[in-house]
Length: 321
Image 1 (cartoon, helix red, strand yellow):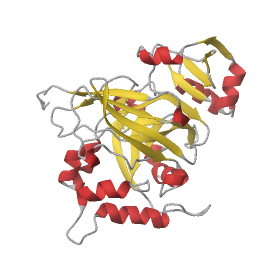
Image 2 (image 1 turned 30 degrees about the vertical axis):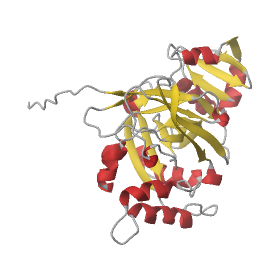
Image 3 (image 1 turned 90 degrees about the vertical axis):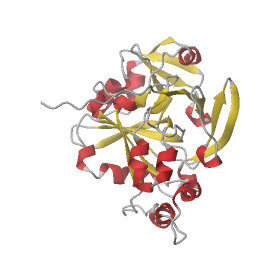
Image 4 (image 1 turned 180 degrees about the vertical axis):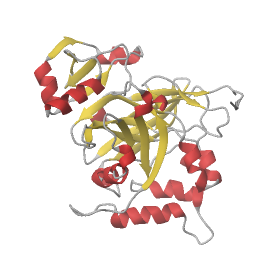
């Protein structure tokens, strides 16, 4: 089962080829809260509310009417975060940016730690991953809308990933809702200058959706990352995700995010991205304004597309009271 969110209000449930509005539901967030309060799964609550009008999901996506699969009504209570160096092969792209004189980068060391301790036995705690912060819901961009690179950025590049969505219940427990495609847009040139600039490079928008898969993440996800320029594909590469292709379990990545009380505040929404091993930047490709990023995987329904836009320079004024 997949859920999508309409910008104008309304939740769409797709099962197979059949996409219908969920009755009595204006937002996915409210639907999730209702399921938590009732002690039901999202699937059971959707079944209880019933499905109404049939919709053309492809047409809605093409006309820009679909939002991220879920949003918080207050953007300040939606956190965008992620983990890196979590996928088999992800170290090679990063290592080329951060090799030290001893011949092994911090990235490679972190990657090896994940290989050795990222998949602990049940009941045990694994090694913590690289972690990063991308911002609040202000930076959550709907499918089809531009990913805006700030005027001071040195690069604007795609990162095809899978994101998990979580709502914190009234007792402070994270409740996983599902997973979607994500483009964890970053500035790789800034990151390459020095690894300590990673935090700066991640403070960029990210896009999610259009559909959220309800249930467990498949062990193997095989997708495609593309860049289109003038309607033609100018770069394309497969990407892999799912635990079969990762050096960490999802449970281990979740633990090391939600172990912090800061991220367990009732009502908050989290979109947590699980990393990638595929970057056009690692192939020496340079993006341009107007390029369209496309992330797709059969397991996640409709593809995620976003054009690249570069923001105009804006003067910064610091006022004193």
